[in-house]
Length: 185
Image 1 (tube, rainbow, N blue to C red):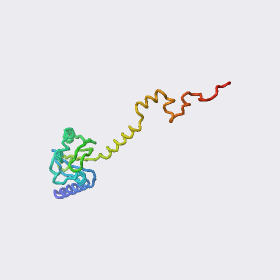
Image 2: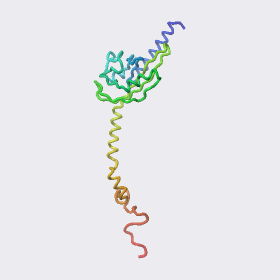
Image 3: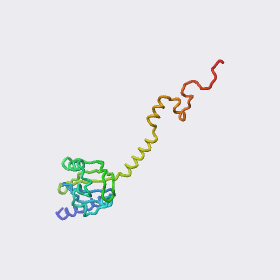
Image 4: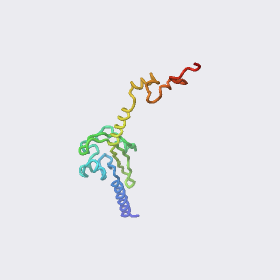
């Protein structure tokens, strides 16, 4: 295999990898070792309503209004390459300039390029805003449906009387029916 064949092979693999990145609907970035954006997919541009010119070549932490510039996220991203670490589901809640307040899960992994042994970082963003709102609404409904502490205390103090809708009062005294005549008489 000569140099030209090798270049064509590498180029075709790059095109194939870029095609995969562009096919994903979830917002995705590829960063270089310094944290600058090498490429972003259509999902990223559409989700955050930003242009390629506003994204590529800029640091992740400078994008938008700096909402990604979170010390813990910065530390996690900086550990990916030297420690072969990964980020899985790091939650970021922020106000984004064009889409408003959103909750995002951030996952990231190191990519090693076998052709030149360089590394980059693949970052995937998942918008979980609607899921978090649904969970909060469900929690509110469950809390409203649960008996209050006062009701629970009353149920423990007067088990046969306090829950008449759930259990007949006659079950309060085992083996005896209320209103029955005494035997033998």
